[in-house]
Length: 154
Image (cartoon, rainbow, N blue to C red; front, side, top):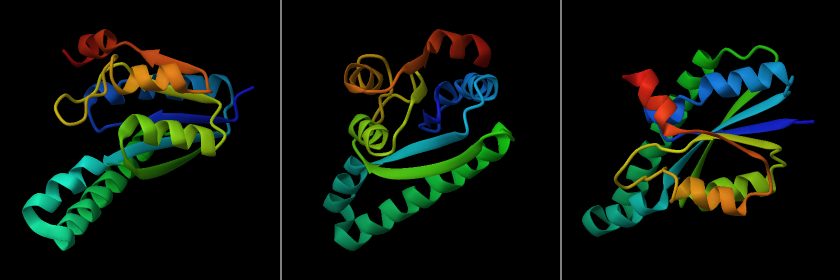
């Protein structure tokens, strides 16, 4: 039934608490492809332009992208999904829009994400990114409540 699972991550412990759920679902349902995705926010570039100019902003975005790629590589190694092809993707943009665009353009069958991530610039809590994805996605969405994450990280 499911051929491609998307797991959006924002580098927070709350976002990562979905990993064991994603692994279990991918293994139990024999999902052949799992994509770990992180969004480098375009607002980072805009904020950098004010202080460091175009070249400095491009450098800041490149560093953020490189750090996101390294992060996803480490998560992929920890995930340890043997039966699934796990890939990593870093995109730039506004988080909800970038996730929705990826879902629509890449044939995602299932999305697994947490209801809460970082606060501050990147608010991945229900009422923000998750709510927008929930309301607009064409794919089933498996949500792990942030309370589950708090219990496990406490």
